[in-house]
Length: 289
Ligand SMILES: C[C@](O)(CO)[C@H](O)COP(=O)(O)OP(=O)(O)OC[C@H]1O[C@@H](n2ccc(N)nc2=O)[C@H](O)[C@@H]1O
Ligand SMILES: Nc1ncnc2c1ncn2[C@@H]1O[C@H](COP(=O)(O)OP(=O)(O)OP(=O)(O)O)[C@@H](O)[C@H]1O
Image (tube, rainbow, N blue to C red; front, side, top):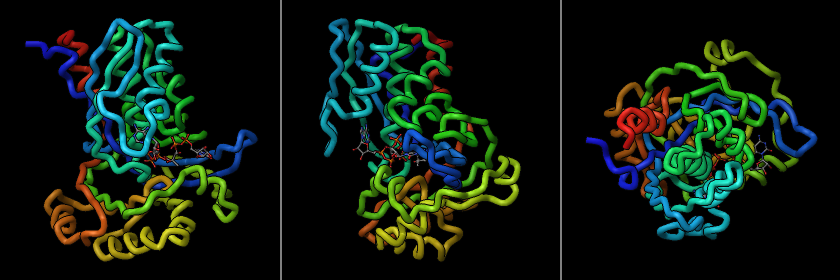
């Protein structure tokens, strides 16, 4: 039996940057990057109650973010603007992704809002068109809209889907917040990494060009890297503060999570090639929920 769409929990998965190469600065202040966006089967969940009054509201405010600045609200308004739609929505967010952790939580929430409301409001935009709308909200939004683990170039919007192994990751977030804008504008950031091909990345791997700088500015990030390096090759995601390490099984990752120092938070997740959001979208498209 089809599930009523207002009861659906729409996933907003987290991502890891399996490398983050900064290859140059652009005239608009943004940076050209090369990164492997690895989607995870762990994330936030959003519930949408469509309305006819055109108002966009959150069922509960989010800690530290004014409603008008919330990427969920901004995404819903961007869709209204792009389509002229006069419908509204009340939106609940079950937040599980640490905020400001380099895990793309805000961007993923924005992407899920665009994809879900495009369906619930019947506004009919294609995924590439939604990705264009999403790019105005953040460089990480398009990959979540397209819904496939991908090699990314440009500011992160030029995407080439890549099939990656289903490793298990332990992701650890120290109790500090790293501003993406502050790291990208720091004079000591490495910005001249040479372009590589996706084939070269798949063969040799890559580094995170923000990691050395962030580890110097935030001793807690350095401590997490050193601690996780006991169990494998630890790497930071995005501009931090989260750090991850790959494991061959869920059990191996859980065993390390069990001994994680109490001052840090962590979760275990599996790498996925297709977004859980798109798995749901396929189901609702078939059942017409
Ligand atoms: C570093 C990554 O986390 C890698 O996944 C992302 O590229 C950041 O993506 P995001 O959080 O969606 O970033 P945005 O909200 O678009 O940008 C935040 C700030 O970071 C800087 N920024 C971001 C992305 C980029 N390619 N170059 C930049 O210089 C800009 O100063 C911008 O004002
Ligand atoms: N719905 C939202 N969820 C999380 N953060 C939000 C949201 N809306 C706005 N924000 C703001 O965006 C900032 C960055 O949040 P986010 O969790 O996306 O960081 P991030 O994981 O470091 O992102 P990225 O890896 O894309 O740089 C937060 O500190 C918060 O102020």
